[in-house]
Image (tube, rainbow, N blue to C red; front, side, top):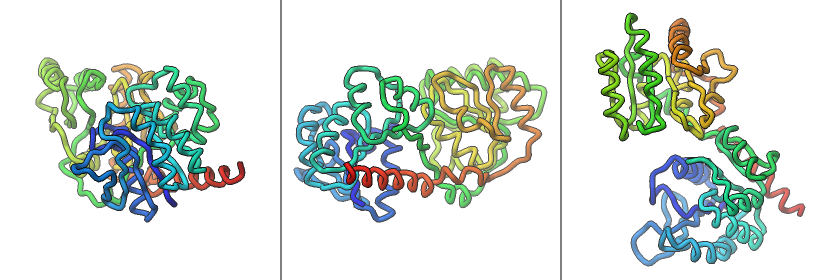
Length: 353
């Protein structure tokens, strides 16, 4: 199958969760042997408008991320020249979605829209127009699906598809030294790590150790709070860690705590749950993390620090595990099949129109 992605910005321009999510899908399709093209702003040296990398063909539709007008004017003709079976666009910026819709008409291909929701969903006019153009919309969580529906999109056309994980990598990674509680996120104003620290402080008369993964502008504040609460000797701030290092910690941990105020999809929580952790999620209106633990025996949803403390105690009574097969439906191959099934459905529908 020939799939053309439309994303002005790629992971080679800027490292974000949204760019990482779509790049994973691009890589999975290429690994499976599909003919994958990406229409983007050039990020490579030289005058060539095309770049072949890792089985993917990148088309430099414009030279500058600020030049949306040129990108959108050229995009429909670039898509027609590719001749894709499916066009898959990202929602940001919305102008590229409207241009991709024109390209889909020229190419006679269905249009899919990946709406990550990172940073929220803007309700501006262009976003509302974009929400009504694609054949299908993909959201990472029910939370983001609700936001998109509020723009006027048909809810029946929105699929919730998680960000995939690699369960083989989890099984192949050796656990590190045992720890009781782990937290992982960029330590910014939405991290809300103080909820966990205050909850742990209530348990200072018990034996426990906790590991904090991640860095950011609020790290000094959280380290100071840990000292003020007199629990800093039980906390390890490890800073940034690569995927294998994170998995090793998750496989060694008993509990993963998710307390962030904003989260369109809890990627680290998913990795930790699949690595055997008991999940404790503090509910917030702008976070979808609770969606992963609802209805699961090894998951708790809390709404206060007292409830979080109680959940940590209850979680301690559950058996330690370093792998959870219940999350194999989130594996990269399983998630890819969900996309491919929708692509095939979209092509069949397009041929009937």
